[in-house]
Image (cartoon, rainbow, N blue to C red; front, top):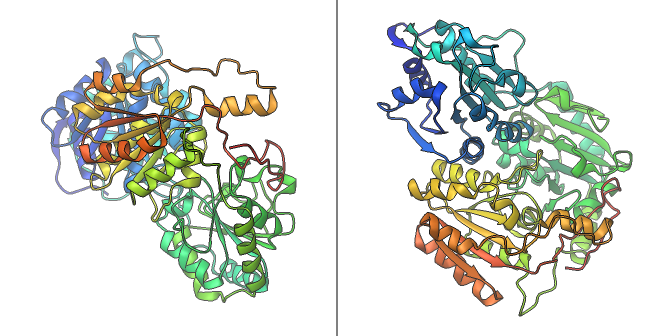
Length: 562
């Protein structure tokens, strides 16, 4: 079914109108030969376009925008290398179930398959890392395809959808009308869940004496944080979250155990291993969480709530599966459950929290990375925190105090260095009311540091705090622990002066070399209202602790010198 009126426009103009009909307000992109017709129409449009300096950054920025706002992010590139440069960002969004529509130019239809200049089979390349993708072959199909692309990207388990646009499609004239709804045979996501399964889960919860809730990024995706907290308080069960689930329950909530897994809290991991009922909500039992699979939660029956049926029993056998949206199911489940008989269990968890807190050795002459994160947390309360990938990512997850969802953005599944700064730009564009801080490492920041130009040109006051230890820190930590300190190709000390780099782009650059300089530097960056880089020289061989070695059970925890 389509809207009543039609209008004769070219494909590029039709594409603009489709974006407007979908409520898109911002695009992140980079022009090139095969997408010029679209950019020509964009010239007269009210859509905001953020010109990045690398297409990978366009995808990450669209990702950050989507995670921070809950809307579908949009990125644009030309054909060939422009399209392939999006791939890492698309894969990042796919692994973390982020709604995104990627628009790519393509050589004219008559030249596809002839190895034309800047041709690539971007549909084939992205097939494994998109929820769906399209090559537009008929300009009259463009409105339907765009309607479907946004529908697929944002419904069910969200994910990226790519639309490849040959140049001739962009310049062909069509009678434009936009579909009012989408009907796709075979794509009918389940939202409400099976009531009998919900009741079975409620009965199982009533029998449990050591229940634990394991919450993943799906809770945040479904906007179910409030329902999660209400459910946890109803049954009085502790909650542990995945990396991408951080923010689903406030850090300081008494039932919050923090993150579990490889670099999770000891008490979260111990609680998982001692539990008799594991209630997984919007989580996929990935290897960084479970460690040795056969040793994970060995005494627990498992309830798994997830909108994607493919995740049920994929890694861990499930006793009671409930397929559906976390928000709907948590609401329904809360109606039927009662408080568990878990007073002894909660007392035991308080005992573990007291005995095994997150901690580090404070020093007066050396800046500890954990201290930096604590200072950011105090100065930038309720900020959106974005990270790159590595040690700093784990310290941010462990030591920043989050109070609401969609305020911790990080590459969880793919582990993409270079994600943080462009994603922070996207988050700030989407949530201009929020302070946005990219907590970075000196290695990761250099992956996309050219986006300082994007932030300055567009007056996007993102703050990058670089925990500068002169190493590719997480790899160095593994080399220290498991490869006899053979630091092969991980020493990058002195590779760049980040203050001068920031100033060269027109941003504010500040350096902190002593603990007493950290807080004033962060405060200055916030007060400046400008894009800012705070280069913090931290202890060079600080380790992320606790740590579970790869392949070990999650209660086989190393205590590292920190």
